[in-house]
Length: 81
Image 1 (tube, helix red, strand yellow):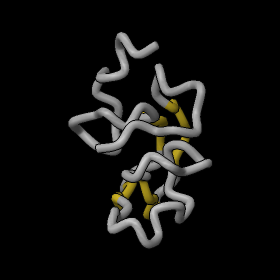
Image 2: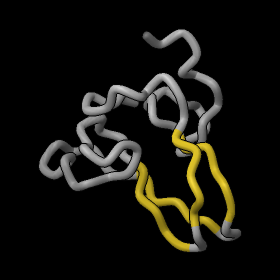
Image 3: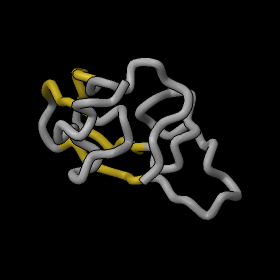
Image 4: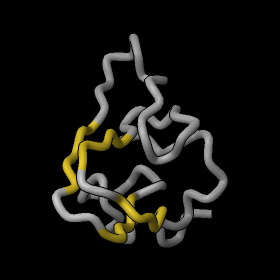
């Protein structure tokens, strides 16, 4: 799993309201829309992680790229400078 390259706030999760639907979490680390895929992975062989939100609410989405529970934050960002 790649760390995100284009975000200065990767030392904490993105806490956001999400509606019911399909989202795409970046796994290449190059997106400009951290933590969501913007297609920057095309041609790299890396694929996005599609995930379903079945209940609208507030979610903590990983923005460091190190989570072991993608796309959700698991605290792996602790200690990142």
